[in-house]
Length: 396
Image (cartoon, rainbow, N blue to C red; front, side, top):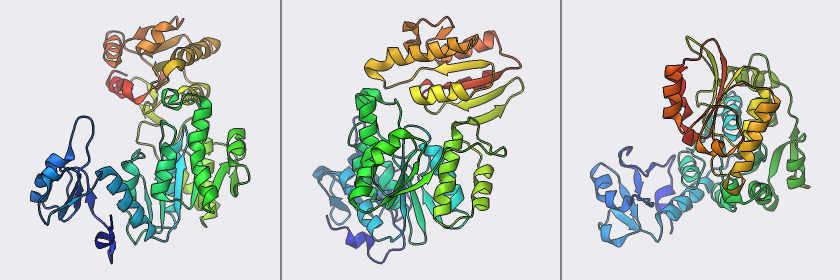
C-alpha cells in the first residue's frame, strides 16, 4: 500500500482505532480481534467525522470513504513505519523483563529538560501500541522513546522492524512470561532481538555493564556503558532495584547532552503514579504499591529491597510449567527472611507449602481485611496485574 497520500507535506497525522476517541478528520483503522470487529464500526466512524476508514472486509466498503487492505493491523504498522521514516530524529527503543516502563518514564523526564520528547504512554508497548505511539509523533518532536514488550519469541523483532530504532536499551532479563517464551533462554533470545536489529543497522546500545547476561547478548555491539549505581536520597521511587533504572536514564541523558545535574534533578522530581514503586500513606499504614506487574525476578527483587513488616503478595501469571516451582521459591524466600506477617492471593500459592493465609482472589482478601484490619504496618503490595491488588487499598 502506498501511504504517501496520507503523509506528504503533513506536520502530523491523526489516526484512531476507537470510535469512542475519534478526533475530527482522523483516519480510522478498523482493527479486529477474537471478540470484536472494527469493520462493523467503519460507517459510524465516518459519520462521527473520520476522513477515511481503513477496512479489511469488503462488505463494509463505502466508495470514496474507505480504503480496503488485506489486514488492517499490518496496514497500521506499515503506515507507522512510513511516517517514522520521514522523521530524522533519534528513536530509542527500551525493553527488558523488569523496569522498562519506569526507565522509559525517567528517561523521558531527563531528555525533556533539553528536547521536545515523545514517548510511549502507559505500557502501550505491543503490536498495536507501538505503531500508535509512532503515529503520534509530529515534526516538532526532537527525540522519541518507544517501549517494547514481549511475551513470545519474535515479538521484539516485529516491533523493531516497525519502529526502526537508532539505539536501544535492555534493562535486564529475567524469568517472566515463561509460558510463552518456554525458558529463560527464550527470554534472553527474544530480548536480544533488539540488539540483533541494531547490530544489523549500525545502531548502538546503552548497557548496564554490571549485568553479565546483557554482556553475553551484546557481544561487540557499540555500547554506551553505565553501572547500577545507588539510589539518590531525594528520589520518590522506592526499592534499591530502581537505582538501575535511574542510572540508565541519566546515562541516556548525558549521551544526548543533558548535564548530570539536570538529569539528577529530573529523576528526583519524577513521582510514579502507575502502581509501580509507589509509596502511599493511608490513615492506618504505609504501603509500597507495586501491583501493576509481577514475575519471579521482580518479585524477588521487591522482597529483597523491602524494609517493612507485612507482605501482601499476589500470584504470578503466565509461568506455565514453571509456576509451581516459582511460587514455591517465593514462599521459601519469605520463610528464609522469617516473615510472619504474610497474606498470599491466588490459587497458585495453594500448591505450595506456605504456612500463611491464602485467598483465592482480591475479593476474599478484601473481606478478610475488613474483618481484621491491619494497623500501623509497613506493607509491600505486589502481584501480577490480573490480581487487581489495588482494589484492596481502601481496606488498608
